[in-house]
Image (cartoon, rainbow, N blue to C red):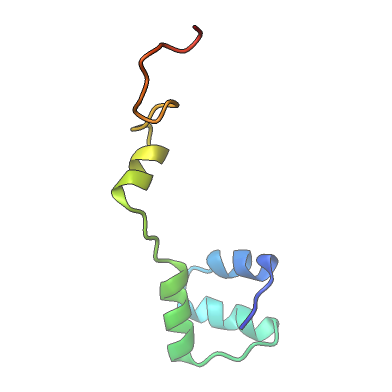
Length: 73
């Protein structure tokens, strides 16, 4: 099923599988309760590896771990 970016953002904002199912119905998409549960779980699962987590949390500097000269020189 192909969703628009707007539909996907609305789906990500749903607080429950039942809310996702109701949203889908307003968009003309029929989902069973099991499908809604599966889609809701998929939308709410975030897979970030340790390296990605370090990069976004400030664990990496701008020179990619190979700074021999300070910035500004």
